[in-house]
Image 1 (cartoon, rainbow, N blue to C red):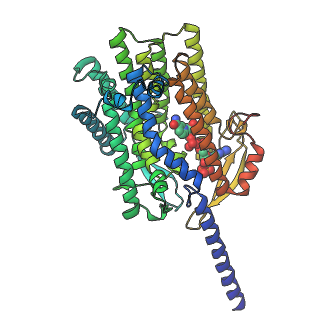
Image 2: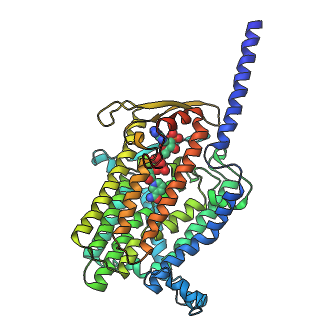
Image 3: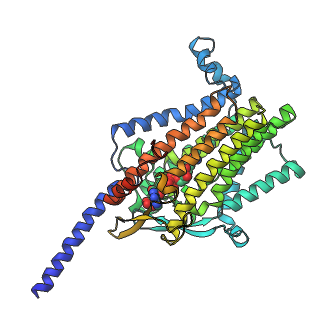
Length: 475
Ligand code: NDP
């Protein structure tokens, strides 16, 4: 009897410890619970200035031939007033509103109504219903992975229109670029506001919500982890991938069509940008199932950062090189063009192989071969909100033995190639590499903070074995 009571007490103590651990890990895993002043200041800065930054870049192309300094000089010297610039900016039009609404409705239709058929005939492609990672509350969501199909259908229709039907001009996106910007902003703000209200009043999974009580922080970083409407309309998967990323290649094609219309030919730099960014976009959709395991889906809550970012920031700022080349049709010498292409392809190879190695390693639970050998790894464990203990592995060989985020290094090499394709006359096309460097270094630090909280001492062992983040021996 005494032995039985002691056993019961020990079990209660174990349960209590587990709950404490859980609180601790829940507090750190994913988005923060409390806001420090630096995060708040950064968030306020972004909320106020990110829309202005996008406007400034697009306006400087439309009114100042992509010079970033001329608008400022004009304003500072009193040559122009803000109102002069604003009065020359195209406003929202019915035509743009109709184009944008049709676009979003069409993408929702492709996402919701056509189950994936690509995985049935494309060898090696993983599509259809797939599971995401375990959420902090211990849930596992199912996703309909059909982005590749949506991308193919959209592009087939685009080319069919451009070559046969001629319902609209392929320059349609460029011709309505600023009016469409207002539409994208309306959708971005609407969806972020809706996500916030939904998070408060009717969340999909209340246990996966985080509320700091600070309105701005919650609005920016999101309350709900995986907001959904119905069983399948997942906000993160839809807005992260489409309409922004499906549009990315169409936007570039529209810019190329505009070059053709204006100058009678498409420059080799425009072709380079279309090809390199096209590979990146296609890669994204080919690996959409893998994408379910990346930080955006696994760890970020859905707020303005993702909602507005996917609708406005991504399609407008990731396509700056193509836009720039409409105004400056740079023709590169062959040797330089080959150099840029090589850098872009090498960056892509590193990016893809690094991601592939981790994916293969995790999918097979380490029972695979990396560079012809059995992978080396560190065993680690973590706990979810419901107190369940999970086990995982951190690979320390292949590209993951070179640096802790070598996939980011490859991504940065590719990003630099897009910028270099535009020559050196203006700063504007280089915004992308500056932005990606800040984004990925910040992401690196954010991810490592999270992993360190999640895995504790196991993470320390890992960083001792793989001491560098992006470049072995440097950083
Ligand atoms: P990663 O794919 O690098 O995923 C990081 C996660 O992988 C960690 O949180 C951890 O998750 C797990 N992990 C870390 N180290 C190891 C290891 N050694 N072995 C096994 N698993 C490990 O990061 P992202 O999701 O940020 O990026 C995915 C890709 O998307 C990158 O290539 C990036 O360049 C790209 N990207 C592009 C952006 C763009 O705007 N163009 C924006 C953001 C990303 P766990 O908790 O499961 O252990």
